[in-house]
Length: 189
Image (cartoon, rainbow, N blue to C red; front, side, top):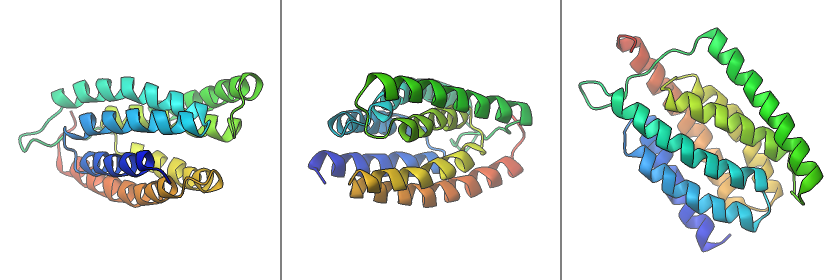
């Protein structure tokens, strides 16, 4: 456990908590968390997750812009449904991304866990895209991904980060309930 990991965990937790509350401030806080985790994952040779942090940075900028346009009268972000077609396309993109990233990192790097790291990274991008699109179903994918991340981080000895991801599972459950409730009360955007 390093000081970098401690700070990254605290900032990440704050960003996810703000996301669950549908607050626009979640985006700059999450951008800082990405930068911190980029460095941490570089240090422990989780290259797919390192690259994922850079891609999250781009997705965060997209989400920040999208959420700025989708605020309700109370200042919170309006939630949108995820169609079965969108869900299928997202899952297919996640699987293709996992295969491509896993193949590359298993053949061209000294990645510690190339296939698991690739799969979790790829499906995290799908979940992040759905979050940026304000879709409550994103939280269900986050729950599944985070459960597996806990195991990977325990295996790599990143105990505090594993604890963060365990807490993120709880936050994702809360986020899903809040977003689903908000979707039921609002008019589709």
